[in-house]
Length: 223
Length: 396
Image (cartoon, rainbow over all chains, first blue to last red; front, side, top):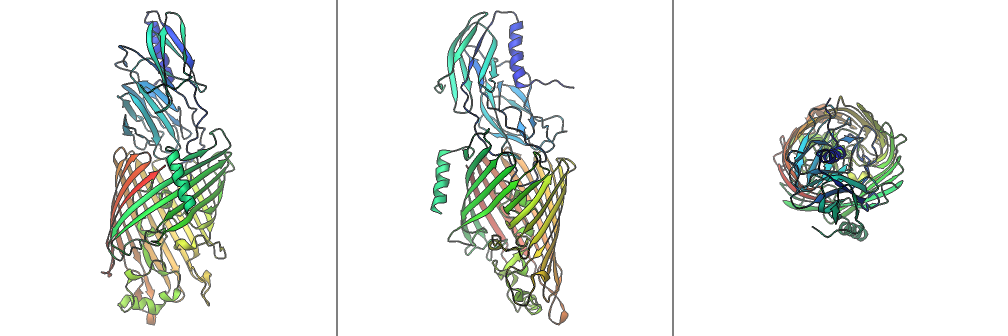
C-alpha cells in the first residue's frame, strides 16, 4: 500500500521537518475572512449517463496561506500530494503547494472523471480516468500562480491549486483559521488567497518560541 | 423577447463565472440562471443537407439561450431553457424565433439515482446521442445521420406517400427526393426530439433505465413538440448496461403514431412508427468511440410498411488540452414500398454521410467548433453534398 500525503499533511510535514532540524522557530496564526459559501453550478445531472451514485456536498471554501521573504523559494523536491475525487466532488476546494509539486488525481467514483485546467499558469487535461485505474494521473505544477480545476464530465465539480514559491504554506479551515509553525525567526510577508482576485497580505515578525498573529481584515493590494 | 435579451445581457455583464446564482450553497432553495451565446456560420450546397433549411449558400445562425436550473432541497429539480434564434433548425425561421425548448420538473425520492420522475418538455431517452446534444458537449455541429436526415415519410400529408406518389418519385416523374420540404417530411428521429410528456428513469452502478410517455413520435417536427395532445402518445424505453466506466451499451425501443395531423378516414393507430436502437460507447483517456444502430418502421395506408436501417460511428480524440478532433460516418438504407400495381419501388434512396469536426475550448466558458460533412444520396444528383459550419459558443 502506498502512503501518499494529502495537501494538509504536506504542510504539516514541512513544518515538522523544519522544527526537527533543530533551529529555534516560531509560528503565526490568524483568521482569513472567508465569505459565505458561494454557489456554483447546481450538482444535478440534467441529462443521463454521467452520474450513477450519490452526489456529495461541495467542499467548503478555504484560503491558502503562505509566507514570502528574501531568499525563500520552494524546496527542490517537494513531496507528491493527492487531490482525490469522491461522490462527484473534489476532496478539497483549494490545494496549496510549493512550486514543483506533483499532484495525483485519483478517481474514487464508479463513473469517469476528467480533470482539466485551462488556466494560463498550468494548462492540462488528464483525460478520462476510472476508479480502478493505476497509476492515477499525475500533474506537476512548475509555475507559481492560481490554477482552476474542473471536470469535463461533471460541470459542478470545481477546485483550485494555489502554487507558491515558498516551503511554508497551509490552508485555512472552513472558518478561515490557520496556523503556520516551524518558521525561522525574521520578518516576512504573510499572504493569503481565496481565488484569483481575493487576496490579503500582512507584514509579520517571527520570534523564537512565540506565535505571531495576523490581521487579514482588509483585502490586500495586488502584489 | 426584449425582456429575454435584457435579462441575458444584464446577467452576462454582472456575472462572469457560473451564471447568475441565487441562494447560498447551504440554502435548500437555489437558482442558477445561465445565459449563453451559440453562433454558427453555415456554408452549404443547395438544397442544403441534413435538417438545415437554407435559402442561400451561406447563413449566419446566432442563438441566445437562457437556461434556468433550480433546486428545492435535494429531491426537487427544475430546469428550463429558452432560445432566441433563426429557427430550431438553421434557416427554418430566418426572421427570428423565440422558444421554450426545455422545461423539466423532476422529483427524485432517494438520495441516489435509482429513481427519478419528471414531467415537461425534454430530450428523448431513446439512444445515446440526445444526452450529449448540447452545443458544449457534442463534438459536431450537426446531429448524426439518423437524427438529421429527411426520409420519404410525409408526416403531414399521407397522400404524398401513396403508391402512386412513391412510384412517381421513383421513376423520375415526381418531385426529386432532395426537393422535399423539410417542414412536411420527417426524419427517423428529429434531433433530440424535445417532445412533451413524462418519464421515469434511474441508474445504479451498472444499469440504467428510462421509460417515457410523450405527445409525438420520434420523427415529428419541432412545432409538434409543444402540442399538448396526448390522444396518440408515443411510448419510448431504454435499458442500459455499463460493465465499468469505459463501456456503455444501450437498447432502446419506441412506438407512436407518426401522423402529425388529423386526416379524415385515417386512424393514427394504423400509422405507427416502431423504432429499435442499439447504442455503444467506449472511452479511455483522450479517446471516445461511440455508435448507434437504429431500425425504424413506418406503417402506411397503402404503400406497405416502410423500413429504414441506419448506423453511425464517431470518434473524438483530444489532441491537446481543450482541443479535439472528431470524425463520423453513417449510412441509411431502406426497403422497397408497394407501388402502383403492387410493384416494388424505392421510397427512400440510400444515403451516407462522412464528417470531420474540430473544437477548441479557449477557456472554460468559450468554445470554437468547426464541422465539415459530405452527404451523398443515391440516384439524386440534385441533392446538396457539402456542408461547412463554424460555431462559437460563450457560456456565462
